[in-house]
Amino acid sequence: MSTFSHDRGVLLLARGDELLVDEVAGVADETSGAPCAPATRFQIASISKQMAAVAVLLLAERGALRLTDPVVRWLPDPPPAWSGITLHHLLTHTSGLGHWEEHPAVDLAAPAEPDALLAAFAAVPPLFRPGAAWHYSSPGYVLLARAVERASGRPYAEFLAEEVFVPLGMTGSFAGPGDGRPDVAVGHEGGRPVPSWDLRTVSMGAGDVWCTGADLLTWLDVPRRGRLLAPASVAALTAPHAPTGRPGEAYGYGFFVGPLAGRRAVHHSGDNGGYKAFAAWLPDSDQRLVLLTNQAEIDPAAVTSVLDSDPA
Image (cartoon, rainbow, N blue to C red; front, side, top):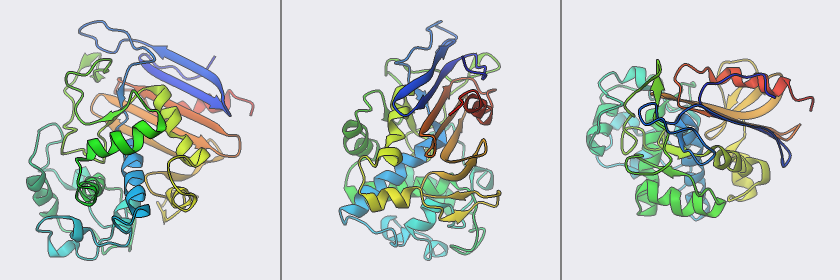
């Protein structure tokens, strides 16, 4: 039995291919009373950045783009201030672009036209020159998703479905709005449903993916087993490219790389309106940890207490 308590959602812990913790609790929708189940899909929020990074790496392997490409090559009417920013800078949060708090004009819950959203990002000057520092930036990952669309000639959600989720067997996963789809959890705060953020445009690439717990566990096999990508791309995904300022921690491509519960790990948390998420792989003990919840009050970092209950 795990030492972590959650009122609603899914908690999984595996060591090797053995599932040690498999908990499903609470309701997926307070209004209908539908319970959370293994098939329930949750917003994974910023863990979605890993899918964006893998999409970029897949296209780089095919020669459709290069990580050294300036992002302005893949954007319509880019601002001059972005001329030195490369896709690598965006992937590692070293572009100088701000996070949501630096863009108060952007309403995370309101639909936006893609070019109007880019204009809103461009209205805020970069915080530093590319590569000079590290600053977490969801808008940077929105730009990466736009680059994926331009380089692939396909809508971003379609690219993920066909090139990422289907090959991995992640049959319960998708990107974009959950409207009209079955087995979708509703985000809650204070015990009440809350409106979803816009996942079609505003959070595209940064926080737009839905997964079941089992699918997110499978997703961790990309770094763990080298699935989907060439070995060099897998190495780039989890390399410590940019120190974050926290002791022993760096950012790879969509992954934090550093200690977790005192152990070497690659991991990421997620926080969308009404949803929290966490996913980690600890290579030395070959543990995978997944939390998906539609309860805003859960602290994703607290889920690491489950690792303490496993003697491995």
